[in-house]
Amino acid sequence: MKTITHPFRKLLLIISSLFWLSGAQAQTYGENILIMHDAVGLPSSTVVIDVGIQNYDVVLSFQFDVPLPPGFTYVSGSSVLNPARRVDHLIYAAELPGTNTLRIFAFSLTNSHFTGNTGVVLSYTLNTPVQVGIYNLSFENPIMMGGPVGDWILSGVVNGTVTITQSIQFLPGDSNCNGSVNVMDVITTVKYMLGNNPQPFCFDNADVNQDGLINVNDVVGTVNIILGEF
Image (tube, rainbow, N blue to C red):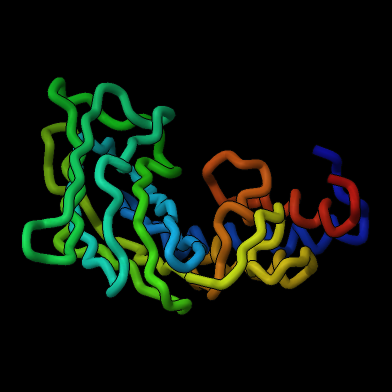
C-alpha cells in the first residue's frame, strides 16, 4: 500500500490521535465485549452478519440470542467460526422453536481458548425481508466464559444494524454506501472506530485491506483511494 502525501499525513495523525484517545477512555482493564457488526443487504436476498469479540481475558465459550426483525429468517447451517480465531471450537445455531429468536453458542470440548484479542469470531447468514429500511440486531441473554478458571467475563456488548437497500455496490473505501469515495467516508469510518455507530455503514467497503477489522489502516487506505494512490 502506498503512503499518503504530506497534506493528508497531518490529518491522518489527528484522526489517529482522536481514535487512540477515545479508545483509551472507553477501554478499561478486563473488558470483554461482543460486537455485532453492521451490514448492508438487498431485499428478498441474503446478508452475512459478522460478530466480533474484543477481549482482554481469554475466551473459552460464548452464547447469545438475537431477536430477528420482522421478515428476517436464519439460513440454516450458515454459522461459521473464523478459522483465524477458532482452535477446535464447535458452533451451533438455530431459531428457537415457535419464536423469531436466533440462538448461537460456541465452545471447545478441550477448553481451548479463542486466539487473539480482537476481530470477527463468527459469521451467520440471514434471509432478508422485502421492505427496505434499517433494522436493529441486538444481543439478548449474552454469556461469555473465560479467564483462568472459566468465569463469566462478559463486560459489554455493541449492537448492530442491517440496512436493506434497493441497490448495493462493493466499492472499497465507500463506508457510507453512497456509491462514491470521498472525505465523508473517512469521517464515517473514524466514527465507526470511535463507536458512534454511523448509519448506514458498509463494513466490507470500509474494510479496505479486507482483514476483517476496521482500524487506522483502513483510514489510510481510504485516503489513498481518494488520492488515486491505492
